[in-house]
Image (cartoon, rainbow, N blue to C red):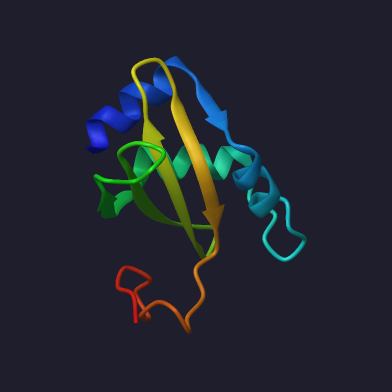
Length: 100
């Protein structure tokens, strides 16, 4: 799935309104550059083949001392960014790869 995500992103990246809202929260401030680095350099940690928005996945990547999670859905001519956030230790294990 990772190759498909990167290929979709080469066409265009579409940030859905929910993603923009989550990225711009004052305690997060996740930039598009960080999202794009997560897409290219991150690891797929969960796949959602039956998502109502279409097949999607969760990618994680460490940047600047913090972990970023991005949920995205590859389409034929763009990559939809559904959300991006900083994972909470109460919901994720210390490696931020495993849900509690």
